Amino acid sequence: MKVYERLLEKAASRGRGRLVQDTRIGLGYTAVKLDNGAIGLAYTLFEDKKTCNLLEPEVVFSGRPADLVARYFLSAHPLEAGVGLATINAIINQPREDFLPGDPLEIIGLQPEDKVAMIGYFEPLARRMKGKISELWVFERTEGRFAEALTEAEMADYLPQATVAIVTAVTLINKSFEEILALLKQAREIVLLGPSTPLLPEAFEDYPVTLLSGLLVKSEGILRCVSEAKGTKAFRPYVEKVNLRLK
Image (cartoon, rainbow, N blue to C red):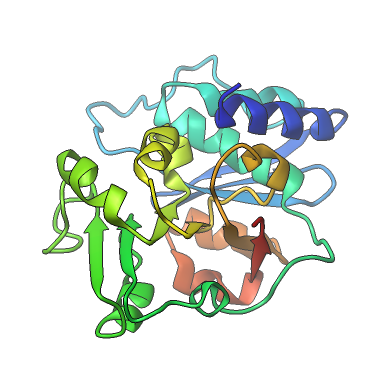
């Protein structure tokens, strides 16, 4: 069973009996609120807008059972997949005793000889690593976001050399996660990072991910941020950054 199906299966079983109360598909992020007040986030992945009808009229999220809406995670449509992952995160991203606060870079303990592969450009982390490691290879699909970004075609050349990998959880939405993980042959640390990260260790038990780094939503003020096309800087008053050690 692939990670996508396993993640859905475990989240859906926990979400039975819950309803989706509110759905926000913002330009930057998607948010789903359940009827128990829990809120989950996911990146809004959509680049090819050719019409104002981005979803079919029969596609409805709010008011439906959470375990059914979560199944959109497996959809080939990126907006539907994002809503599905946000629903999964609303179900599973809840406080737990083994969460670690703080900076994921400090938790993994970077070394001067490390060769770091960053899949998805996280500017604050990249800036802090500059000059402190041997190599930093950034792979970013969004054109113009990072001038020195390498292409996906070059992953096969660089990822097997990486000793540390920082992987955006958007790879779960576009379903490139497993392909990328298969190329990380010698990475001692693999961090799955970002607001889209599902904090569910059981989903990754057959994968070499060592740290999950994501967000817990503390306030429904996040809904306004998402609706107004805000990003992670605006999220700060409404979320808590947490880490979960897997290995």
